Amino acid sequence: MKLIHETSLCLFHLLLLTELFVQSSSLSTHRSSHCGLFGSMIHQVKSLMNLSNKIHDLEKDKLQHFDEVNLKLDSLPDLQHTARHFRSLKVNESLLQLYEYTQSFLFHIDWLKVAKTNVSLPIQTEEVASSHLLHLSGLIKKCLHLQNEGALQSTAPHLPAISNAFDALLYSIEISDRLKAFCDSSKRVLRCLKSLSGCPR
Image (cartoon, rainbow, N blue to C red; front, top):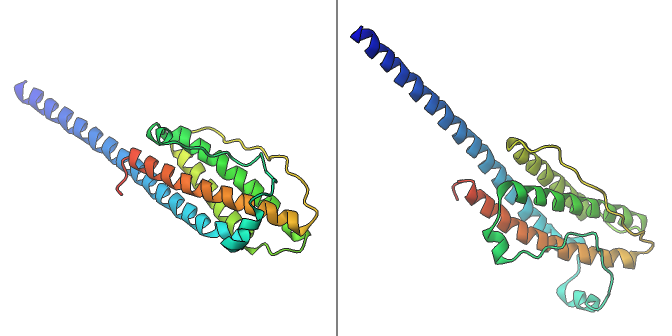
């Protein structure tokens, strides 16, 4: 009886260790998937940052002439992240917000692409930016799927008609500036989320 009891106890310990190993391996794989996705998202954001100035393709001295022009797109995300905001980030909430912002910029860039085509302006930069935004959106969705988030919703904003090249240029400048701010903020957010998720630097 003593031998049977010791054998049963040994088997129980082995099963317990196996279960712990499986759970640990699962957590490690889950974290590894997240870390890879965060790295890819940061790469996309950096690529968008490099493209942002090319949307209007104007030098700094020429941009100064447009400082007083009052033409605004209220539908663009209003990014006002404080130090307090970055200290209180939560992974799921922040990713959902990042997804909404990414979709918004994707709508605006695609709208600008059509508008520029209609007034015979080049759209190569918008096409590349749209591709990066689409890729970023897909990566965020994949990361949220790993965290069992439900279906993601996005609504196309109502955007004005553009009838001439000058207005297209003005909107290009605004989208460029706001995209730059979005990229700067998103890069910081993603690095914070990466750290919160226990990923290596």
